[in-house]
Length: 343
Image (cartoon, rainbow, N blue to C red; front, top):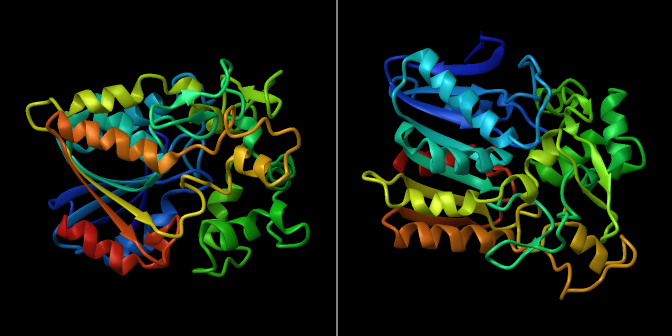
């Protein structure tokens, strides 16, 4: 693999420049490096792999992240990257936050997509603060989503460059990545490239997680208009679900493969990262109950959207990977390589 800078965007590339182009889009607290094991297993003669660092992540020159247009801006950066390489259409492999970018590309730039593999993609309604398969907001100000979802102590340890796994564990970036995100499928020594990715986040209002607004609604915060985590709030993704469904009516609808780990604790109908789940368990006080702020049914929301997409003419397949978690391409890259290559 080679590391490149294209107009201040950092990316990894591998394989045959004359081969089938495949673009890999990473998730939150991550970078292009997370795709390294999978890309190294791809047929180097058949495929041309490109894995960029999104704006705000890794080594890409950072522009302040405008949450109001953040997902759209990430998608446009990807389209511009295709144009730079002279690629008319590519196959896409996206994960988590990158999956929300994948939904945006499908909805607004489907003509550039040959096929779309979504690995544990974020809900089309983003993360936090919604209920039901139609993504109804729990509160008018979308309280319970956005930058306030991120633990301030964890953000501070990122800001300070703390790569230790010292107590308290749940505020250690290295511990969270190794134990929660990757489920101990890798051992993150202090200089591991996966940990580099998390530590490269620019902590603050314009980067990670973004600004936080006070709210009179539970749990006391609402999304602001800047920063990474605010960009994937439902406040700033209104209409995305319907736009994806409409894309099924295109002349050549994009086939979608949805892969998810059966033990994913992050993108789930009962996510361990959901404030409502913390409220139910008593970790966040004064939870108003299931009628007002239930756990976000992320999987149900995605499935409902894809079913409507298929009814409009698109196609999709859902595959559950038993015994794997949020990042199956790290836990079992060979299994993922086989599935996406067949697709």
